[in-house]
Image (cartoon, rainbow, N blue to C red; front, side):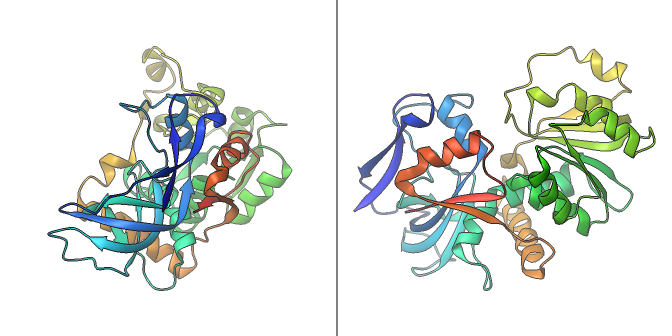
Length: 324
């Protein structure tokens, strides 16, 4: 018997319904995965609300998970029944079993549990492309990372520390600021009690940042632009507070000929080669101990609505998972 969370219409957490589903045999090039853990990410909220609309109803949200291969389709030669694999980016994850393209999953290496893999694939690979591809962070980089106590933020701060960067992190409240600091942030700003633009100017002596990573959106824009040195880069990769509304690109010229990008992971792992490169880099930094994955919450699959309430209410830190 297989179960999944289904969405019949866009809306709040209450539209996440638990249902029995039929999962057939894998087709050519597919695997059937019995999931042991499922990652919960803010993109799931965007799918649920319709900010990132899906083509039809009902659909199952969730873009990250891990588990055991229980069947393989024709033509699949590099995976076998019993392998433990993980994936990110394939919607339909809130389910006890599912079908997946074999070329979009990666084997979980020894030393990493299914729960850890499920909690880190989407967030960890996001951190990887942002720090290593969107902008190549190194020891000469001064960066600002908003919402640094979140899932992507805690991974990214640790990774950026390994790369030698000067990290200015924002978070909401003393507890979250302490988490960001313990992850390796050079400086932390409590946006609940401090004006982050003023603090960035103070911390940098007016030199500002080479790059700002903003997964918050509406609440931090356009203030983020005032934290970037001329010719610097603004990376908008999320909308936790709501999407950035239309703006005149002339503002980028006025604030120092800034660059702006809105990346998505799909473009960075579009081929099997780049998927494996990204995932293996992530596995390496986790196995080395340079990046620790903090799984702070575990919910039963049927309780996905509560997981969403907690995520949207900013009651969570680190990564949270669903368990079928």
